[in-house]
Each structure stands twice: as structure tokens, then as C-alpha cells.
Image (cartoon, rainbow, N blue to C red; front, side):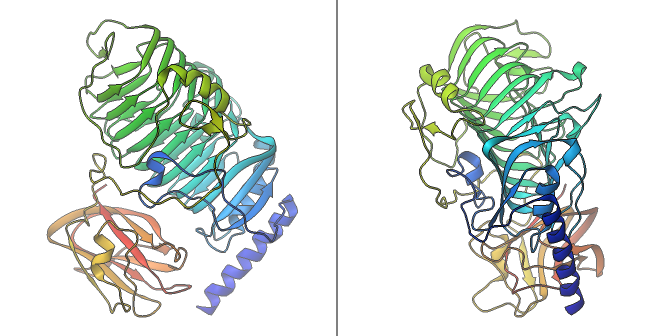
Length: 511
């Protein structure tokens, strides 16, 4: 244990030296993580607060951003990174450390949590450099511009996505950003805002997406349906061919957005997806809602939208537009409160508020811009009871046991879907298990720590409790994947910790 602590200290000192070398200022004060508070589905599942309560640092290069992540005490230590200037390939290198997993040529938020990146001063521009969020949770990105990210040609970054999320991502709020390209796939660009491979509880608000072939997707293929619970509100989509967004499976809430010059199609709900589409303004566009390019239908609930000079193609084959008189074919309830602006004033309020460097202003609910109230910790809204297709938490309804538990805690607290309850071992290490009456095939688990105890879990093993086989070992809580295994009991064994662990949820998934 002492050796592990010493190694972590050496890594922290090395990262701190890198921080100093690339010019990150480490002030002694604490600061709020972002302006305003998260909205929409980002408030569910425990909420999204980013780096609130942690240290605030300043970065003027991509290397400095990575160094700030790597200089934390752990991969979950809260941090706010204030960014100013142009971030590009020339100033973005890989930085190593125990609290990060970075790469050159991309801003890599991988296997980490509790981070805010916010543009300040004269603005932050990520030029031809994408932001990649992978196996991460509780992330805020605010007041930045990401432009001209390519997947082909030179230079390339992030698979051509301005912001891309994948592999067990949870709770991301992207707010007041500008995402733009200079063409479509033929010119080397891909999506502006993509989510795939089990990404859930995301909000995109007060942002501008423009001049691209593809706005963004939720689900990379018809079989990738483990994504969902996404909110889009008060965004401007302008000069885009399609995917505003493309939604495969899952649930989306799309309200008070302004759409201008969508050239081929707009909101593409397919493969069983359900979208609540209300009080949006569509102008000078084609086929702004429907199921396109597939025979696998999606669904929508519509209300209060305005269609201004929108043309609709005929239904045939894989082309099924919702218009010319869109009608609801499903119902979608959302678990959070929100205020709708009237659709007629949406273009005006969005033009005044959406995008980077607009003063981070928001609507007051009556189509007038206002500065957000002081940041407060929002009251988390309940996790929706129906997860996206393919993402069922098999721990719900199962049984649980483990080694000796700490006073006042319960084994059942790790499978009740409630992040405010937890199990603790009687010491710094111990076992917690999920079990079923018949075998289940499991290939992924998520260990969620209780609020106030993040980062306590150190080393661990995941075991097939029937035969003691080690399925995976590592350190730190979060998403853990391994070879699909049929078993009736799975154990998470904590073998090292920096403080008393508090496991709020032990989620189990088939894929």
C-alpha cells in the first residue's frame, strides 16, 4: 500500500512538473465549475456538475489541458479547466499520469470524471482538433468553438467528429458551444455531435451547429441502441445536410431549437427511437422530421412546431417523412421540469443566446435573454424507469450479498437505482456481489461511488463467484468491460482504497 501511494505521489509530482512546463496556472482558490446549471436529461441519473468544488486551472494549449487532467490526485478529482486561445495539433501532445489517459492530436477525456472545460477571456477555439469523451461521466463543456475536425485528409482528429462520445459515457452537459465544419464527408468531415456505444443522460443547449454534412447521431448503427435520454434545446442548426440529429433507439427531447437550411433531412428518428419534438422553428428546409434511409421505423410526439417554407418529399421505400402535416405516433414523458418559449420567437432568442462568446446568456422562458442565475447544485431528477433498448441494468430485481458491511449500510443499496444510498465494507477492502436465481450473460458492469466518496476505490478485481475466476482487474470506479461470461453471481472485490469505499450502485449489463 505504501509503495502504491509512493508511486501515485511520484506520478502526481511528474504531472505537476509537466503542468509547470506548459504554463498552466494553479490558483489556490476554489471556483464554480460552470456558468448556470445543467438542464434536461443531464440533470437525471445523479445530475451533472462537472468540476464543481474542485480546483480551477488555466490552459492555453492542448498539452496544458491534458497536464491539468494528469495532475489531479485521481481520475475523479473535480477540476475546472479555463481555456483561452487556439488549441491545435501543434500544441496538443500526450501527457501521462495516473489520473488520465490522453493522446496526441485530440483532447482526450477518457476514463475520467468530474471535469469542466470552459472557454474564458478572448475565447477558446479548438482548431481542426476534436474533443473525445470515452468511458467518462459528469463532464461539462461550455463556451468553446470546435471547428473543421477531419476524418480524412490532413490533419485528422477524433474520427472527424467535433465532439464525440462513446463507451459507457454518462451525464454530459454541452452548453453554449459553436461546432462547425466546412463541408461534408467528401471534404473529409463527419459529425458535429456524435454519441454511440452506451452514451446516456446528455444535454446539448444554447449551441450553434453549422456548415456540415452531418449534424450528429445517437447510435452508430441500427444495432447500437444502448444510447438515449438526450435533450436538445435552444440550439441553432444551420446549413446542414442531415442528422439534426439521427436517433437510433433510445429517447430524445428536442425543443425550442431553430433550424435553417436543412438540405436533405432533419430529425431522423429510426430503429425504435422515440423523440419528443416541441416548439421548434423550421425554416427553408426539407424533410425536417421522419424516418429516413431505413425500413426500421422510429417514432415522435409533436406539438407547437412551426414549419416555415418546409418542403416534404413523397413517402416511398425507406423514405418516410412525417409531413406535410406531422402527427404524433407515440408519447414521451420526461422526468424534469422545463419552460417552453413560444415557437414564433425561437429564431430570435436562439440568435441572441446560442453559441460560444455570447455571454452565456439564456432565455428567461419568455423569449428574452438573461444572464443565468448563480450556479447551484441542482436537485437530481429521478432516473427514467425505462432504459434505452439494449441497456437494461440486470442488477435491478436481482439479489446481493458480500463481506462484512459497514454500520448503517446495506447490500441491497447497490441495486436499488438510488445514488443516495450505498454499501460500505467494514474496513478499507471487501466484496460486494450481485446474484440471480438463473445464469445471466454479463460483459459489462458499472461501479458508481456515492457523492462525497468519489475516488476512494483503488485496486479491484471482478470475479465469477462460482469458480473464483478473475474476469478483470484494475483500479478506480466506473465502467468495466470484460469477455461475456455466463454466471449466476458476480463479485466486485475491492483490494485497495484511499478511504472507506462507498458503492452506491453495482450495475450489470449483458452488453
